[in-house]
Image (cartoon, each protein chain N blue to C red):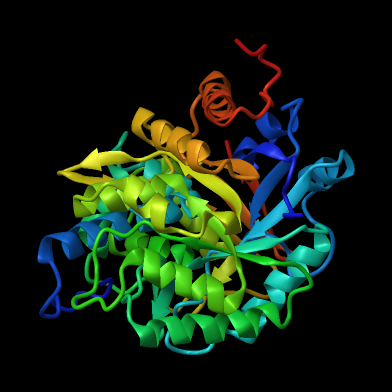
Length: 279
Length: 129
């Protein structure tokens, strides 16, 4: 049984939209940025209320840097494990990426070279992380605007090898699949056909925008229709156990957020969580 | 990528430049969350461009220090932004090189007709007539 089975459509909980999230009548799960939770003690009151009402909370790490050449910081791993305990999480998630190198913080997720050496580094860091976790870990492939020269593996090979060797679950971001395919001039359906979709724990959907010919996965723009279409293709191939909308700024009016959540329900066939009657 | 080094050979320079632009935009959004008045003082929709132009090639130091360094390099003329900076300076000692440390003990500052007090690690403000 996959940890989020039956949880349907969720949303990334952020303090700025906590009032909106609290009033979603059908909500069964949210994600919270793991680094935003206190290292010890109770979670924020608004999250505690959601937990008390039976909503599952998934800590989503963004700064572990699992793809860094150096071992993951034990303090950050401990924080993720503590966060999972604090919210009684069914699982946690992190990215296949690096966020710092040589003591410099990039401030965002950056892509790894798709080499066997990088696979080994990620596998070792995932092992260091899961050793401290009481719950499963889902790994999320990122959207990248650039690639390293001379990649040895395709993205599908790279991801599949990491997932198989770590036995981690897959957090598939369908907007990232769309972004990477568009920016490389590839067909996003090809990647879907080659990924181990049976490992999906849940799926992310976020907005983005085209800027100077490249698609930027901004999380601050509306979800494009093309991404929703790709989500439909994914569901036709294999419906994910749960799906989550990520929004990280430039928050739109509540009606627009509700419409995006309803669009996720329509694309996946999961019940609407907004209280809006299904059409 | 973030500290101004050149693009290594073999990389698509356009793709790397797009990534640098995206990283600067993300960084400007993070700083705007920590320094909302400073960001607003750039004018509607101008912060990302204004901050990025200054931050390009400077290694990120976290949003607190990035915004602080920017504010010291461009002392805000906007009243709300100047007050935001004054309140930070009241609570924290920042040498421009290492992480800001909380200042100890009580203190008082006069800032454009307002009395700013530090008391037990918090600020109290009084508008003077």
